[in-house]
Length: 339
Image (cartoon, rainbow, N blue to C red; front, side):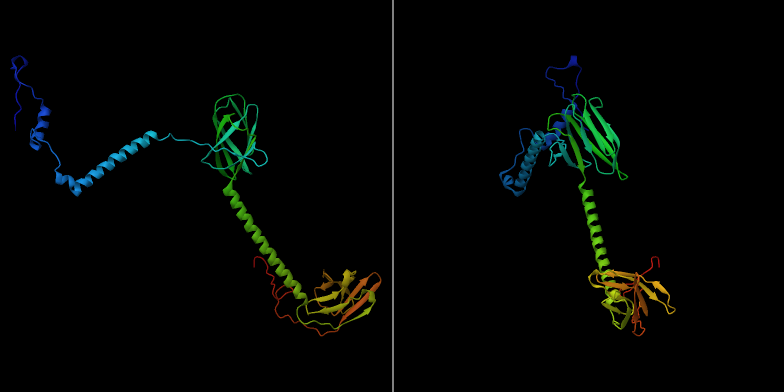
C-alpha cells in the first residue's frame, strides 16, 4: 500500500514543504494514469467522421434541444383554468336560462342585489341537502325540486352545493355564485339529455306497441265481421204479419242470422220462439244497415208496439262450421287467461 507523505508539525515545517490533502491525492492519481500531465483527450479526424461518432453527436444535439424546449414549455405554460358553465338564455326571455345537467360541471349563477333567482331541477326530484358557502350574503330556500336564491348584501363570490333525490338516486349540483358582473338571471332550468332521450325512446316503443295492438285489434274485428257473412248463405225465410216490420233481406250462414234494414230504419224488438210458443229476447248488434243476431233460430218474432211479424226459417238445420274456436270466426280463437 502506498504511503502518504507525512507532514511535520507546523512549527517544524520547512519553507518548501506543501501539505497534500488526502482526497485530491486520490483523485489526481487516476487522472495521471489516464491522461499524463501535459496531454489531453481529443477525437481524431477519422473518428469525427465515423458513423458512430456522428450518431452520438446527433443524439446529443437532440437531447439538448428537447431539454430546452421542455424548459421553455414548462416556463411559458399557463396555470390551470377552471371554466364554469353559464346557462344559456331562453328563447322567449334571456333572463330565464337553460342548462344541461353534468355532475362534473360547475354552473355559474349571476345574482343581482335585491333580486331573487329560481333554480328548477328535474320533475320528481326533491332537494335533500344544500350547502351555501356564504350564508350571510346569500339567502337560500329549498322547496321541492326548486331552490330560491337571493343576495342580501354586496359581497364576493361564493359557492353552493345541492344534493337531490331523483327517483331514489342522488344527484349533486355545484354552483359558483357571483353578484353582478353579467346579465341578470331570474330563473335557471336544468335539462337532462340522457334521461330525455331514454324517455323519448320508451315513448316511441310504447307508441309502436300501441299501434301494433291497434292493428291487431282491427284485424280481429275485421275477422269477426267477416265471420258474419262467410260461408254458404241460407236465404230460405218466409214472413207473416205486419209488413212494416219486415226487413229487406233475411239470411244466415249456420252461425248468424242477418236482417237488413236500409237507411237506419227503426229496428223492432227481436224474440226467439221456442217449440212451446214462449218468446225469449235475443242479443244482436247493428253494423250499418245490418242487424246481426248471434244465433240461428227456427222462428223469430219481431215486435213494435201492437205490430207483430213472424219470421220462419224454412232451410234445413245445419252447422257448416266444424272448427270450434270459441268465437264467431274460424280464424280468431278465444283463450282463457291462465290456461
